[in-house]
Length: 78
Image (cartoon, rainbow, N blue to C red):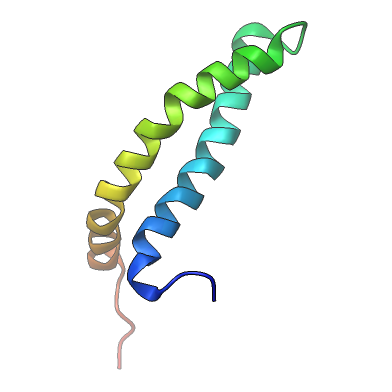
């Protein structure tokens, strides 16, 4: 283990935000501007603008969304 359990929400937020922002900014930049010259620079600009926002939203929203998801899941009948 690299991190103590108390940091689990922070580690999850970092990993999830990097994963989502990398894929989403890549696809959206590709669709809007194509893969031509300068793509990497356009993608990087979109990434570094979007990542802090996504990180904060996931850090703040994930616990609430996990609780909501738990309420929406039907418990198995006994």
